[in-house]
Length: 286
Image (tube, rainbow, N blue to C red):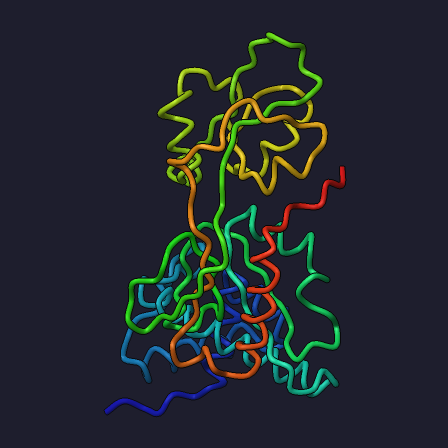
């Protein structure tokens, strides 16, 4: 018969996982390595699953442990929110917003356009290409490029994104520049695929994040496909082609059906909708 789960065991296991071992977790928590080892073993027994492989060089997390960590991260976020409330932030909820790199930067550049310190919610902006799991509450709002298909998700269209090719305005007329190419995860993004198909042999510089290309383009080192809300923000850039109809995408706010009417989520969605429907561009600071 399984034991009831001890919440303290879960907290300490999360510390061990984050620290990468017992010694680091002991420094962070003030709990001895021996005690941490016993608590991890107790958690394994209560869950009836192996969470770590005990090797000479330390602990290695199992696949089951990585699954568990997704839930523990949400618990940790809740615990930190409670701590913040206890320290005087009140009951304001932190809304986790996931978006691609460019859109995340757009939000940060224009934060005051949709959020103020006296708002009833606190923003947490996560920049990545992954579709974090809204069903498991990994995020509250996802900014996506298409309507959600799952029945448990709700979506609100807030605009569209166009793409064009840019180079530095200072580049001499008629000069033939190469292109920036994308590798690793970004190579499989719409931008990466377009670059490979249309200019795969013309890449003179490759980077693993499209956002790293901006400085290269502004300095006249290469050409790059950019969202127009990025390229048009910089007077030292010029369009050389586009926008391309085949690259145009929609922009959607996606949230869980059960959460969409929760007051703080609704406030955040309303503020983001109003902001994004204005077709904002990046701030052109250097």
